[in-house]
Image (tube, rainbow, N blue to C red):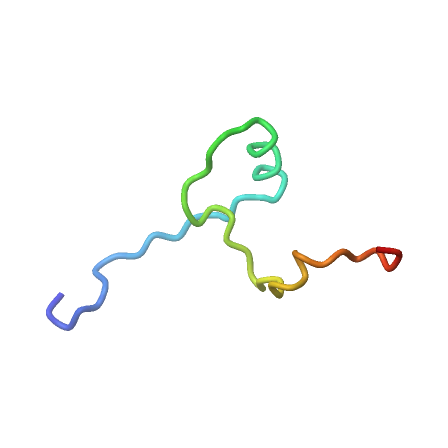
Length: 54
């Protein structure tokens, strides 16, 4: 298009968490952006233990 807009759009159904879990356990590689989740967890949440005894 002359104005730089898109000529088409593709809308796909989301992949379920169970499907992603099953694929990971089976060692299957998923396409890029398959595991895109929103909202994103804060970076520190995935690196800090939640157990107060640690």
